[in-house]
Image (tube, rainbow, N blue to C red; front, side, top):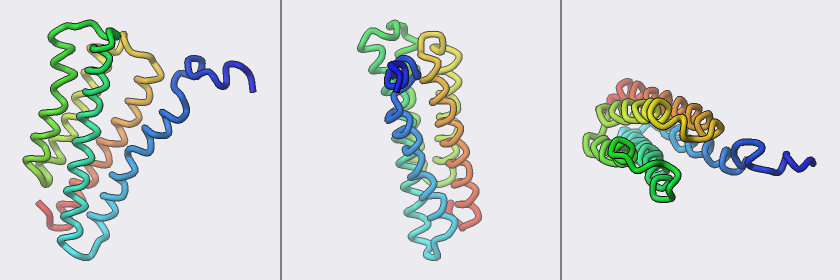
Length: 158
């Protein structure tokens, strides 16, 4: 093993961080299967609520990363950046409060909107490997939440 192979700075991100990131979408896969395949209405509804809660956690944690970077002095303290770091949490909470397909739709819009903010407003200040991982994770989360929304409609959930 060369010195660069075990150096997180050389590879961009630590391999464990990438795996944890990708594993964070696994609960949404399980929820999609639950909404689409479970025979009982109450079980499908529970799978939908778990998807809403987990999608909200993922959205809020994206903002929390930026908040942490600002506190650590890695991102400049500007009103727009602080607002961008804080906005995902109330959007996520509103999605949970709305519930159902509307809440899932708000999470898709919120996740996609945060990705746009992250890449357009602060992308130059963030490591390319982080941005690449966030792009992949956001795409997976948005697709899975949208599929859960469509499966919810087909399953008779609101």
